[in-house]
Image 1 (cartoon, rainbow, N blue to C red):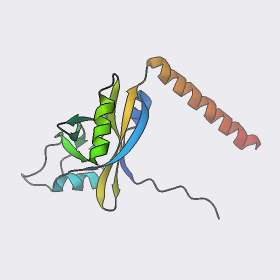
Image 2: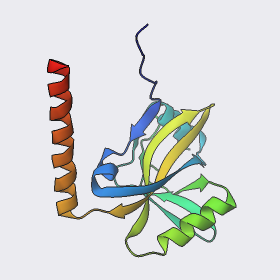
Image 3: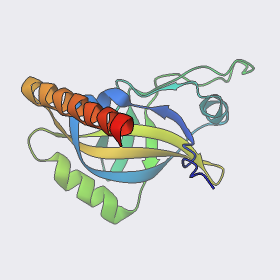
Image 4: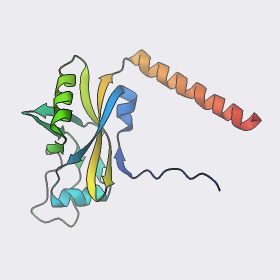
Length: 155
């Protein structure tokens, strides 16, 4: 029987983050959303491109993530760019706080998905890449692609 690829249940991914940052660690966090927000998220109407997270007063907040207005929402529809609280354990929050105190370290959202009916976000502790690091990554990826292509044709 042929191997099947694992189902990727991502509603939104931040591909730019993997290009611009070295991801050091990842955490799965819940998101505190309102009713119209979760409906928009389930419809994949979320943009993580410019998003980031910050630790404030012992809480982690997801900022600058755009969740589009729900089409069937009424006057109580949500603000698309409001800050959203991330749900993590105290130990994880403490670790994130300590890591972000270091120079050049930030927290970026990598992926949003639904798990057991709840919206989750995969956040990563990230360190910014330099331009030459980005070029090196692209070069290495092209070489790996060429090797796979050669092995496929002759293997």
